Image 1 (cartoon, rainbow, N blue to C red):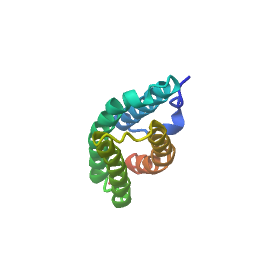
Image 2 (cartoon, one colour; image 1 turned 45 degrees about the horizontal axis):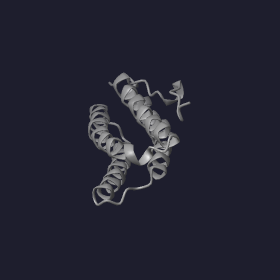
Image 3 (cartoon, rainbow, N blue to C red; image 1 turned 30 degrees about the horizontal axis):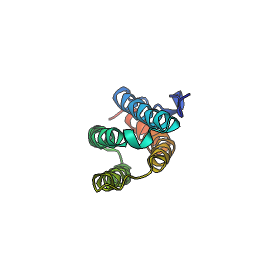
Image 4 (cartoon, rainbow, N blue to C red; image 1 turned 90 degrees about the vertical axis):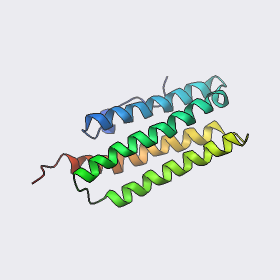
Length: 134
């Protein structure tokens, strides 16, 4: 059974961004399933590479939407994105140095990110993006 099942409360109402969030849920569940079978470390290379790519594309996409809508919360939202990027890159540097971070640390971080950022900051941004622009 997956750790997260996509539910409407995760949706922000912007189809492209909701699809990217679904991909993140899939990555979290893939890591969780690997950990359940003792394969967490074996999948870390693939997961970290995917997260680095995801962060660049997804955050650029979100930030484009925010700029276009003159979202007033953009500076703090961008800072949250920067912290995510930095955390994932730090884990990746550790991995490349042969010091694999524990897969539970990554799983916990991603789960917290989904619960805290996607369901709060992104939802708030989504409400602004759906407002009529005059």
